Length: 338
Image (cartoon, rainbow, N blue to C red; front, side, top):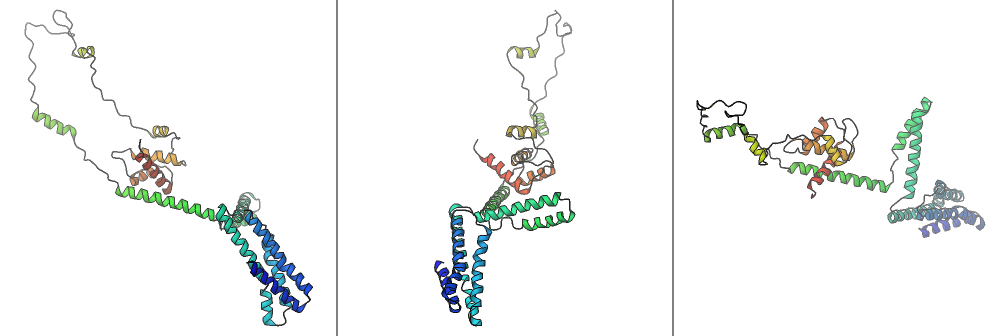
């Protein structure tokens, strides 16, 4: 690159010297290629320091050699040499741009950040914020319309040339693809065993009727025995209650408590998140809570498609990608060792 720039400067000097004196040719080279070399060193130094360079520096890399190109073209004796004389000074611009581009790529590879792309992105975002505010609040109708159109044009430039942004978007897309594949394969290869409901009472009564014999009728009390009234016999002796013996011996009859269904609020409280409400935006943790609640609301637990359908039918809000990500988190929690 240095040789190319030096050859371009020497060619410009020899071309102008043929029409003018050596001093004029030397001044033209100093004003064209020399000043371009200074600007190239400035741009190279700023790039190596990780800073963005002003737009005037970039413009000078082309304006100054263009002036030397015009001077060389005017001094050409004929048409064919006019083209050659005009192209010769532009070698310095190509050399300077090449050095700056290579230095910029080295800095991006080493530090992981592009100062020039960041400066452009910040400028676009500032202009976009200004035009959106003016499109929303400016009193003039036509001014609001112009700002609205300008904001749409600026929106197309966001992220242009930002290598780090592109890498982050690819990472997000890879994560979504991985999550979707995991959920799809889990839903495809999940085995759901559905046991037929049996009439327990009817079957049990039929077996009992065939095996257990009928009990004999209770004997009638003798005629000489008086009727037992109020739990006492004829001698006014209190008859012991059969259940009292159980209580005295510490035997308590078995009582099956009623199973109370778990509510969504209780599941959310256990997870330590606010209770998810229908129609309101949910966080990722709340979506996991809702999916867990819906999945285990039936026996056997619901699959992903059934749970997602119940999620939408219940009126909760959440995109397909977020639901799949929450389902993957729920599956990971279930598979983790307790």
